[in-house]
Length: 167
Image 1 (spheres, rainbow, N blue to C red):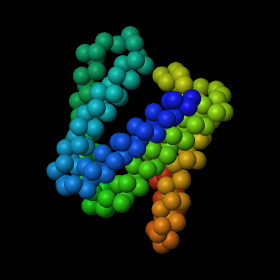
Image 2: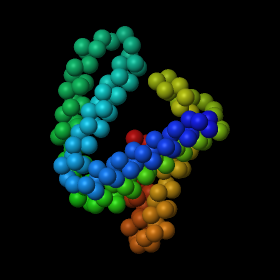
Image 3: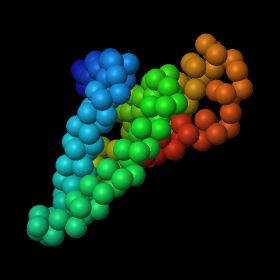
Image 4: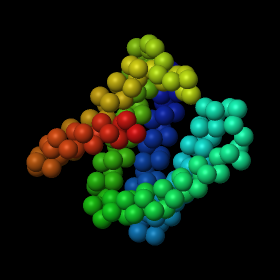
C-alpha cells in the first residue's frame, strides 16, 4: 500500500502543478488543456463501458461516442469557460476536492477494506467511497481557514464537495 499511495500522491502533486500552470498562463492554453483532458476522458469512459458490456462490438459504440462528443463540446466546454470566469482560486478549489477525494478513498479503502462496490472496478469498496466523501470536505476546511468569509462556510459548497466526490 505504501508504494501505491506514494505514487498517487506524487502524481496528484505533479498534475496539480501542471493544472495550475495551465490555469494561470492564459485562456487559450487553459481551453487547449481542457480539450486534451476531455479527449482522454472520452476514450477512458468508452473503454470502461466496453469492458462492462464485453459482448457488444466496438462499432456499436459510435452513437455513444457522438453523444459524448456533443456533451464535451456543447455542455462541458461552455461550463468550463464559466468556471474560468469565477477565477483560478475556484478551479484550484475544485482540483483539491478531486485530489483529496481520490487519496482519501484509497487510504480508507485499503485500511478498512470491506465489500466491493462494483464489478467494473473490483478494488473499489464501500468504505473507500465513504472515505472519499469525508476527505473531499477537507479543502473546504482549508480554504475556510485562510478566508473566513461566509463564502466557504456555505452549505452549497459542502454539497459541491460531496457532488464532486460522487462524480
